[in-house]
Length: 146
Ligand code: FES
Image 1: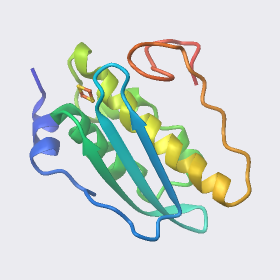
Image 2: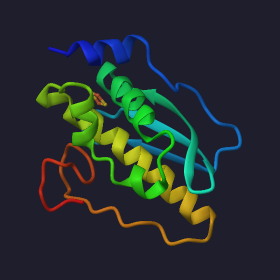
Image 3: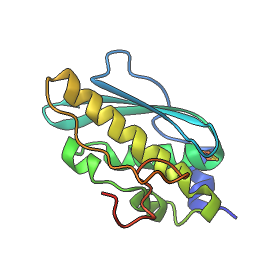
């Protein structure tokens, strides 16, 4: 069962769309379900000045994308990198266990977009540690993951 926050976020998602001159784009697919999420970042200084998403996936994935993009707007890239899927789940008031991977997708798409920003600037991408978990790379259900 979804929380009221998840339903509200899914029925009225924020930050849907694309950024034509994005400074970073990240796309990830979930190995668990095949859904795809794409995040676009516009950076001013070191701050996320705009963020948009396209999610081809379930309601929980759209709710996670919407919440995650609202959370990282205005953050530095380092702050946005530190946002975990558990943070997104908490902000949504919880997700059913079978839908936790949807929030992992949002976290991973944001990190992919951040690393795209860094690579375009000639910087080393930050390391993404993978657990090999079927819920997706770096699932926060595993304490060894950052
Ligand atoms: Fe795959 Fe939600 S069921 S992203």
